[in-house]
Length: 418
Ligand SMILES: Cc1cc2nc3c(=O)[nH]c(=O)nc-3n(C[C@H](O)[C@H](O)[C@H](O)COP(=O)(O)OP(=O)(O)OC[C@H]3O[C@@H](n4cnc5c(N)ncnc54)[C@H](O)[C@@H]3O)c2cc1C
Image 1 (tube, rainbow, N blue to C red):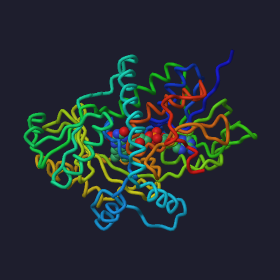
Image 2: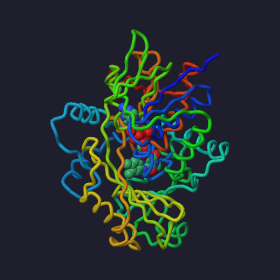
Image 3: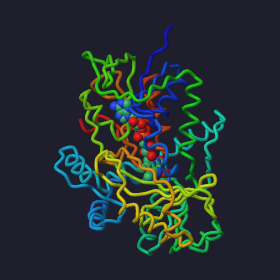
């Protein structure tokens, strides 16, 4: 019997994870990407796997904090004000979602997806014998003000209530765990279940594995629209007029997903959240654990022979140009929390740019599109794509194979704005 064919649009971590589980379930899988498949958000990111992140981006206080940050050119956040209806709708929905109720309801859903993804990554590492520098030794939320530490401690108690272990540490306790480092901090919260990995190694390892198992990859081909009959999508058409038929179509186009989904009548509001990373090769000291400089929203991830810092969230469309003021702000934050590093250390290194696919309620879009019975979506993972996409990929594969997935929840329903 011929295998069912699945066409995945987007070769980022969301697409590759869906491809992995669909291939395992016996589908004939093709992954198409409009670029090289390596120029996406899933390569140069901070690689942190964060069961600690049980609070969605849309939460009380975020808007006032965002407005304050808008006044400072070097702050970690910026929205380019413009008369764009998609942006206005997104901002309105973000505001509506920033409630205690939404945070309360989303926490357990994020926890389950994040813990499941961590478990799936461990399975992939062990069963597929892939090496992607996966270190399961926790994460620090470093705070350099008492107010910041109080806020992080409050989040830690919420995490504990949801069964995610967390511990508030003094600077001396941090020093015990990272003896070579003199962080300029008032304290930290330690999340032992968090982890970090090398995102590029994970992506390349999975692609090589999928290639060897017969998954086809087509690059430099943009899918620009779908053809359909009354119940299902029949064909995906590229911008140069090539067509693909399949039994199932899965949109995993990251920050560009909304544009493609719209051609099938599905509304998934998304804004690209631009961020940067700076990787220091062969620094004199590399910490054991990853961490986040909490007030500055800057990440620090040790990698083999390298140390990566990441941050900023600029809502400026899909423009990948580097904003030098934001980059300077990021570098200054690193030096503030970690005086052993100075601005000159950060000047010479390569800068990476990524566009996070951000939904207005901070929850991903994962599942079946209601309008057609063979169209699926896995996107909108925002700042947690590496941490969530494995579970999302499994959900897609289970929904297509069995019509349902125990991991699915209506909070991630891709039809929720239709
Ligand atoms: C600075 C920074 C640090 C981060 N750190 C972390 C972290 O520590 N932990 C974590 O969990 N997450 C992190 N993230 C978030 C994470 O990187 C993203 O959530 C994730 O990579 C998104 O994956 P994706 O597959 O949805 O999108 P992408 O990786 O962007 O892939 C989407 C792909 O779809 C293709 N595509 C789009 N439209 C079409 C089309 N019409 N036809 C064909 N192809 C198309 C694109 O070319 C692209 O290759 C970070 C992000 C940034 C920017």
